[in-house]
Length: 227
Length: 266
Image (cartoon, rainbow over all chains, first blue to last red; front, side, top):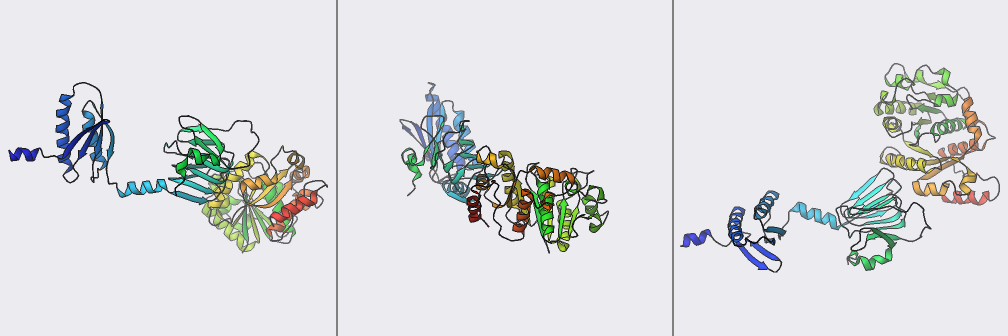
């Protein structure tokens, strides 16, 4: 009796919520034990749920770190259960590399130079360029782009797909603007030039880039303030 | 030990060779020992502009491949004792010389001359790399056309990456004053503001430049031409004098413009 109990010890706790299932995995035992038990429990459940609609599951790992290989295995195992779909995997820990990456993405890199024709300046976080981007030059950032001088070349903000990213320039005369995977180009006839700083952003729910005075960012992107 | 100055532009046909020939002539006029080096292997022109074509015996490639000594390949100008040129080869192409060989030649020339002016071919490939290999300073030539300014910008970016070359200086060539005034052409201020480098000089568009170069007599020799004065002024600025920019306007309002430029840079 006690032997049997030991075998089915609770490394995995399953909780049902209105959004689906929370799978809480013990973080002090071996990975092999968790995955075996999980496989077993989900299979049993699977038999009960013969009706076909998909259940989303959230995995809670506690203080366990999954290697890429382990994560792959875990995902494959869960996906092999027909009506389960992983919503996300939560863990309290991340690798040094991931932490460094995240730090880079959330910092502002300032650069003082002219980005000339043929040059590409790329940063992982936000870019603060003290200088111009000349025609034929490109600036690219995973986050926002702030140009203190004239933007006459190409600027690509949110290069990793972040639609919330913005581009600002003291003189906004770009040859192209890109935010995430949207591209815009100024009209062929040049209108009267505005002598004030402007910004470019994507309005919620729209699929085109809008250009306006920078002051509007206070309203449309309040999270730009990081005080 | 002299200075090696490369004259470059990126785009072809903006007047690199004419500028080299005329700055060289103007420097020689002020008594400096000058050597012009044509690095446009395969498409040499500097010898024609200088009127020295039929005196070429050896060329740059012969020197690089050590078929002759450097001084054997140098051609003395017909007008000045202190002006020499090293012609490019016409039968080879740009890959006939390597940057390291170029640097060695230029370093050797710098021992004997006050100024070594290197005429760079158009483009950003091997010919450009050869031309800048031995240079200490650089002059970027552009014309008031968007395409020429774009290429100049690209070249400036490449020159700025070279640690051994000082920040490039700008010459705006072939300015047509009436078009600039009417706004049909980029104006000098606009070009300088885009390129963001120091202006070394401006040269007006002048028919006599073409006739002179066809005759093999650089325009800098003719003191009555405005372009000649412009080139002489550029030479004086290279020598360290502070000379106000020449007004291209015929008469009216020239003073304010001169003052404006003068106030902006030396």
